[in-house]
Image (tube, rainbow over all chains, first blue to last red; front, side, top):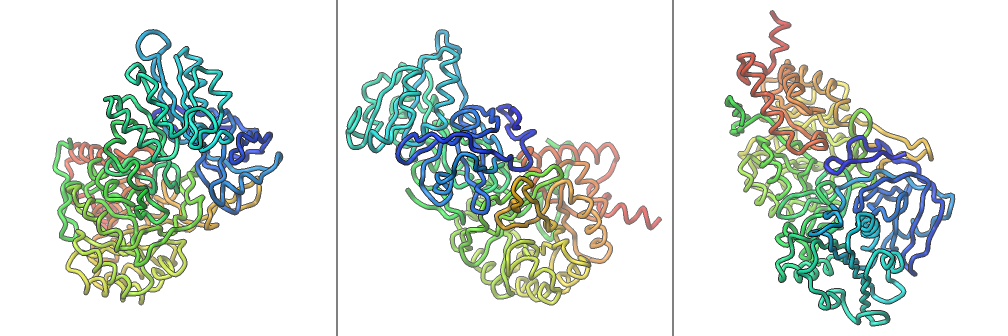
Length: 277
Length: 304
């Protein structure tokens, strides 16, 4: 069983070895995305991640989407292998790691209106955030985007927690175009905090819009980088120019920090070489 | 700020304090190295750099165990050609930047050092325990260690440190080989070969199956290695292996270390360098010691 971690030092008392997590249920969310529910308690702060070990193959970071669950999109060898697992199969899990989102506001007065912006599988770490915000009585507006209507993730879930706006690249549902276009209909200055996760160029575009409105400091973005150790020691996932570790100081970083960073410009591959977006 | 001066001269380098970031830790980018300089490290060592880009071993690459850390990163690096820019950025940190270099033969070390000229010093990694063809394979052969060290010394005027593996019968013999090759200092120890197996499945956990142990578990091993090297060598010994507090640093010094490196302990706190420096400063002041008094003190006590 995994133990509760506090925000400032999430690894303290963390598991020392991968915990054996048996898959108890598989939910087909979209044609490319599944949720794997497991038998372990994963009491994570929204936005924290776990390192999922597919024995004999690889270990990859995955967002915790529900207690004890991860939500996976098939994008490579490791996620493909995860997608082929059956109920009763098991994986090794270390974590939860990283900082997670900070839910501000108490449901009264200033600070209670939040916007959640989720692109594709980026909805995975944002769903528990929406749940937590809702339980605190915050006023939630969610924007979800995907290539096509079939690929919209957690549409029903998010609609339970507040207003929902949809954008699809092909126009098969909601706004026809990128999620940034769907932001136009809102008075952004009326929101107190923005929670964002999705493909990096989408996050960069969203952050640029927020910056233009002077709101970048009120944004929390969950970043994706190549992780090796996952616990803040090796340095593979550090970002420029701050040198912050995405796996430990993040994965959630503030918009005012990221606006002056490598976000949307480049990331690094397994060798540490820069790869431009 | 430390109340007394902790600055040291180490192989011709001026360090504001004797704490150094160890190789392979938070050293992938210039920005990360700069950040650690800002956290109070007296010098920083880069990730080990080779002649060609290398992805390293598959994950899992690192585990936290109850007694320390087990890793098999597999020397991931973008090659010296793509690391030049990072070195330039790291140098903006205001502390000496030591480039860790790995290779299979003397000319390869020389090529990388030439390609990354301008570093404050070079640390030859002849001790990584889990990368085939490199590291320990090289570092357990005294003849090769001597040749590699000599080749490095002939390539650069900067100080050359040689990082030693404890995975040998006699670390002193390898230290002496480095010294004969002209090393300005030896660094001891690299990780201790180790393994962890998942009892739920029987799989070795690391992607590379085995790796190297660091952290508190290896500190007593390091203390003994440093004690022996100090006894035998005329060049400085830089102590590394499980240091996580100023007390650990003092022990390493008393065994014979002229300076110390910190690796895995950044897990608990990246500000560990300032913490150790502050503790050392208070300790030295309380005991009316200076830094040089305690290096090798254990040997002098035994000799009395």
